[in-house]
Amino acid sequence: MSKLFNETKELVNGISMPRLGLGVYKMTDPQTTVEAIHYAIQNGYRAIDTAAIYENERETGEAIRHAGVKREELFITSKVWNEDQGYDATLRAFDASLEKLGLDYLDLYLTHWPVAGKFVETYKAIERLYDEKLIRSTGVSNHHAHHLERIFVKANVQPMVNQIEVHPRLSQEPLRAFCEENGIAVTSWSPLARGKLLVEPTLLHIGDKYEKTAAQIIIRWHLQNDLIVIPKSVTPERIKENSEVADFELTQSDMKVIDNLNLNERTGTNPDTYDV
Image (cartoon, rainbow, N blue to C red; front, side, top):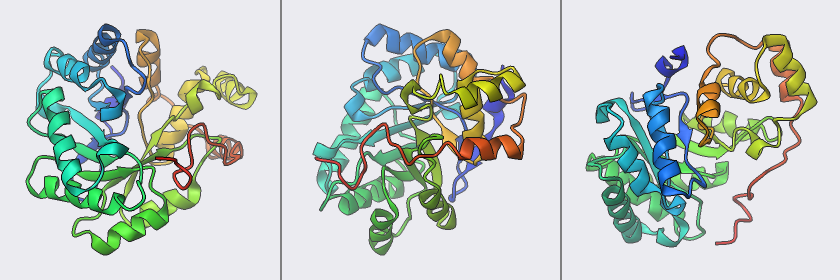
């Protein structure tokens, strides 16, 4: 089992969040979803990242219950979808997610996107859930610095995590630096650029040097940038492969080469232009 599963990121409130987790975006087949999550947990993963809009919270909960691992050893994240944002609606959405997951609490609950006119109140509801000990940590997703600054004005408890699109083609260094300055951990979604970087010659060349795949090189790049990473896969071999990155370290020169792949190129939507 990979030593990486022992590595955690301490959030600003002292909670330890695993550095590597399994993302379950677009896992739509119920049986495949349960089997993938179950396999991941059985092979050492302790963090699962789901969301209401993924429509697989029930399957996530089922896999968790049958994985043979104590609940307190797991770190479960979910997110409130755009149509359920606003203070009261977020509280209702959380209750629905908790019921589907079959859990008593979540380790992290996020605003999925910063819906104009609602994202601050949505975060205030997440803050209430934290105060009521229904979640162990608070956060947001796809928030730029100006979104976070508006939350800072109203919040009593600042966001502890910001989950954003990050990969070598979109390194987001200014936003990452802003988060670091404000004690906010960053989780990378689409860390492999939805597979587009797996045939990138530069990464394949570096992979040959370390006898690793391009995916493993990219995941290692995330980790050495102090990022939390949640690659998605339903394939047992890939789930296992993605975790086998604790036995090597990229040199500073290789990190720089990968940094230079940045083109500010998104695979998803810019939060400032997201049409909700």
